[in-house]
Image (cartoon, rainbow, N blue to C red; front, side, top):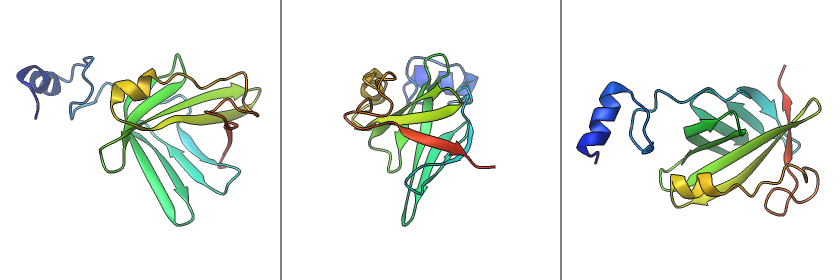
Length: 139
């Protein structure tokens, strides 16, 4: 349930440090918004509200609560509403890579605090021991 302060923030649309309110009208659109494919046959759709990953027989959506275009990451609530994810992205020349560095964080704060994605190790182990995933725009 919302506290009086949270309810007031939701009504005014102001953005506070507590982004678990139902009104997140001040979230920036990710600079990488679009539709992409990855090397595993997945389709990724990034909008101003969410990141949806569709694979054969499986789909998941993360609803954004934080988008930080300056530091190239977004945080959001996973399907089911009990855990949180953080997606980091970076460009290497003309190639866009992403890393879902947090996928089951207990809180939004824990997901955002996981800044361990290593942009200097895209093709080796910079994403929690794995390579970052290359995203190719759908034309």
